[in-house]
Image 1 (cartoon, rainbow, N blue to C red):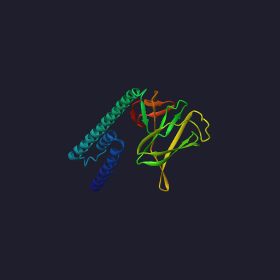
Image 2: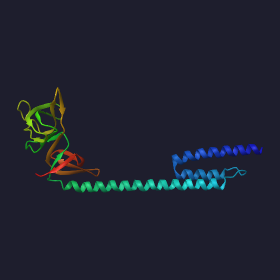
Image 3: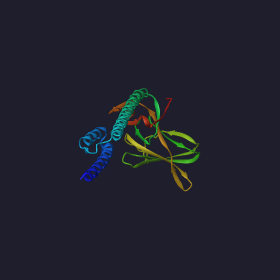
Length: 226
């Protein structure tokens, strides 16, 4: 009869140990503490938990609590850094109003004043590049050619005319620049240049206004002199 009690006690300790490990991983320190108290309440009176085992489990509980506190403090620190960076960015963008910027995008807002310059970058001299301008529906409205270009950045202004010489409506357009590379055509990096006219905030995030076009601060490649 005594042997049966001892075997039951051993199985009980093993099952509690496995459950303890699982709950410690899944539910955290509160569940771990409840499991420890439950184990003490239901331990076999003929084979109580040894002092060494009890101290070891308390040490595990203490280590778990410290790790969770560290994670909470780290999360709070990260959130504070995010809020600080957001506040600094929102303060910075207001200083860009009235400044000329170069932004990494192929999207631009066309207006009759022709205030937006379109740009691209060549890694080596090119005999000829092809510029294609598309409307908001993705329809090609104009193809332009530029010849005898050196390596580096180049800017140009579109006069707002389609392939037949008719003026297109004001609105948003995209452009694509390519250069012939052997038998293939290579698409070039594109960007636009214009004056920041205002700032719009949405859910704590600042967006730069370049006419009717909205840019994020991350789109800005550089600030240039007017």
